[in-house]
Image (tube, rainbow over all chains, first blue to last red; front, side, top):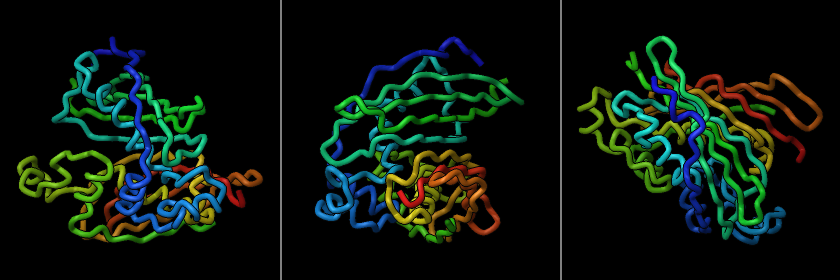
Length: 145
Length: 124
């Protein structure tokens, strides 16, 4: 595998979180906690507005992560790629109305047993500069040697 | 803290998740395409299955999304629509309000998520 892209930083992507988008996502993944759908319930629970479920991180991060995964300098063979692993570390909760800015870098590229391991790190912050999530995305590519 | 969740994604779940997440990879929503690349059928999004593990964890901690501090997973076997997903796990470490759990998600004999590890704040 070509490791030249390790450390490459991609441009920031900003995502404005909508209340109905949170509801759509929460419905799709089977969340039924009223805090995800109802502003009064959310405020009663101490949120500034309707919160996003933790895994909503995927929605606001992907606009930054996808261009990194598809970058020609990284050189992934998509036909042979699978999503091997994922980690999120959460910080400040994300709520409707937040503007989340995500930056992604290539954390590591390595090879083991004929497979390439491409690891990306995304860091997402809200409009006040607070870190909301840090994601580690591991893609595995078969047949690299 | 008891990690246990059962859910059966219906036939159209991958379409709803595609719309909600923005991931319209045809292996998830087009049966003919999926078969043309050697899959038995269209498959679930791995991040949907991870969201079920996340949901099992927050539910176990009382349902507050702020309780889930970290979750890492490995994706393995392919998840299929219209088959029951069973998420199970156990506490492996406790440090005051912070507990560490290990979990996995299976469909029948297929482990679709393994080595899931989560940090939860309980009584937050």
